[in-house]
Image (cartoon, rainbow, N blue to C red; front, side, top):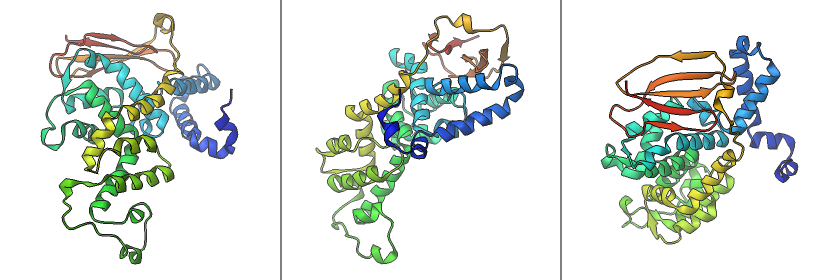
Length: 330
């Protein structure tokens, strides 16, 4: 059934909003790269399985970071997959470093940038304790805010720096000529960068940013409620408040739940596995991780990769959609 939103928007605008062209271009690219294998079972089946994987959120597995972060749906799918694959770490109460969390992220996206992991860790630990251990829940709350709203937070960082410099909120939001910059309001002389900026002025800038931005932003009403009790705040104080705010986390979980609603769960994994298997016996260190994933050709492909160089209590974790992880310490 078509959603009311689909009927209220012009066709090209709806396609752009849903990033349909992004997926069409990627599907054609995948088709051309694997045309010899795909010719065995047909182009129509390939497109059917490709868009089923997009709907289910499994299309981002082992893909390059540029694709993983290309659309809000891809980001929500990645966050959901990360949580489902490694939530056992949280249940067992294990504490990991930023580098170790980055290793987990790279199991799903090999070229995932360390910079994003460090930004998430900095929300939890601040600059002076980046080598400390973090719980899974603390890291996940900070990471999902940093990853899903990355463009928004980059713009917010620029707004914050401009406010510290004494620029007018309108100047922060809308670029002006050099003549307009002479009309900027200066802050009181006794303001220190350590004191942050005025919360109400900061929110005015964020509200305008959310209204005009084309990328994902947290609900402005929830941001306003979050900032209502503060008179002044720093940028990292704002990030920590975002990560800990229950309303904003629920709103983000709602985006991730949209992916969960589309998930197809196979009854028996064995019924989907053919006799053809591809194995890459890569071993680095004494502790390795077997990763199994059903490919678009319904084969079970294995990839053996390093995970942690120290002992972990996670021994086996069975997951839906044919994805499973099993520690091998041999």
